[in-house]
Image (cartoon, rainbow, N blue to C red; front, side, top):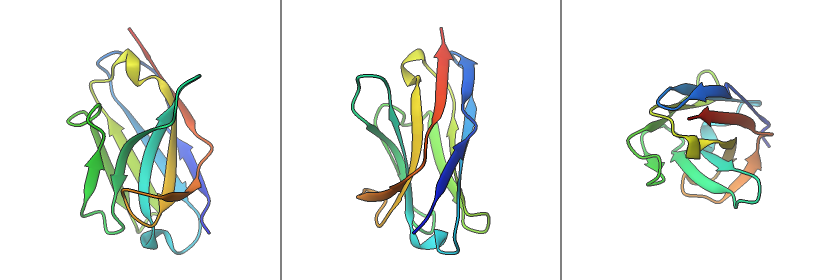
Length: 119
């Protein structure tokens, strides 16, 4: 089992950047693929990006490709989401998740961090 805690959310102007972090507990972080999702009020949860256990493979939703970068440090038990060229439609609560494959399914979830992009 793994526990996940996100941080790094906040308010940013359109065109700006933010980096989200997700710290995982336990000594088995490297055995999990990791992902980032987002969800807003009245919206379904949306896959944003996933990364393999070694970090060698990353996968992105079309809506963020070229603007967001997922990475991980197995030494630090942390996964990151670097977000650039942010748009107001990126405003959501962002969640990190751990699972077997970077394409899912994901079994463990963090509590979320709010990202708000102003126009």
